Image (tube, rainbow, N blue to C red):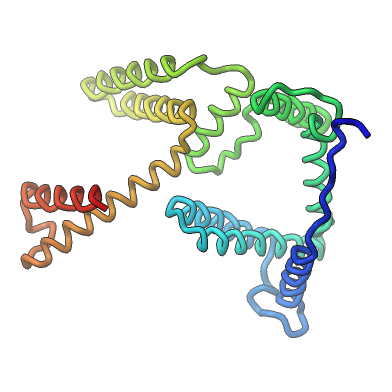
Length: 277
């Protein structure tokens, strides 16, 4: 046996039973004879937005550190994939088994260091090989062969910026250390300040985009997911502002009726309360 021949572990029977049961439930819900009216009328197109929504809900659970929530949302995602596979089997030319076979073949093809004889010197080499294999696959299919073409345009802009930076980095286009992105953030900040002083809204928009992209690149170099970082800050801001609202409410006021000094006082209280938790 080759040293690269992986030892395939048997799939636990409880996993098989759980997946079989879920697929049975999906099939029953879709069955025109006694199934669910809502599920029966769904199409691949109508289900796609739900899959995106469930992905965001899973990301929210990750940001909260909610293990039970992560498990639940992953279940919703899995059900969504299986339901789309079930719907597709009725006229799209593929089904759940094709989905599974396709991803198995892709994973094996893109892991020649596990299933073949390719030697790698770490995760960096794995990622470079992965991108090279993807480009070859696109070439074989007659598709655009850009390193960045695999980043969906529909991603939220912050996440898309992160993935674009990752892809470029895997292709070797990146700073060697943190000094590069740090200097770039400083440079873009100065240019943004100049744009503000110019009063040119188009220039301000462009420079703000450059600044945000440079901050995302810094996050990437630090191995910080900017989407999760920003979600955490939004949650923190929301909690503190709610403290401000409740504090004003106890004084018979609305935020619109309070001074900035009054709100700042309550905001500082919220900060102190959070820091002591």
